[in-house]
Length: 137
Ligand code: CMP
Image: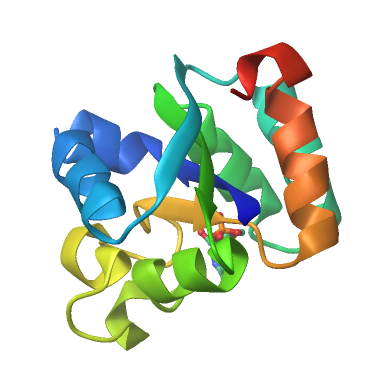
């Protein structure tokens, strides 16, 4: 079993799609190991996305991610990192396959409904950034 870190982003929470996305997470066979609604501060978003600090979209991305509450998740499944990325679809909803979360709920590359870790090291950092050991049951 593997764990990955996921976010239902502020756009999807604001448009009341979180319930549908959680249902799709369960239908895809993930077990939710931790979950929390949290309105990130700008600093928390900047720390989370620190690897993108030099990118031109960093300011807009961290503004958006701190614009309203999001849902933070620890998801478990065999090959969870890859499986969650497949469930989400391509970063840009316009390029995502039919039936993926970003295709169905994302509206732009920035407001793309969900986030997922891209590698085991990233998953370890991201899970640890938001969840303490005690919260991961
Ligand atoms: P996410 O999986 O959360 O990881 C980094 C985020 O940066 C990504 O989803 C996109 O929402 C965002 N992103 C990536 N590339 C661009 C871009 N060219 N313009 C705006 N946002 C981007």
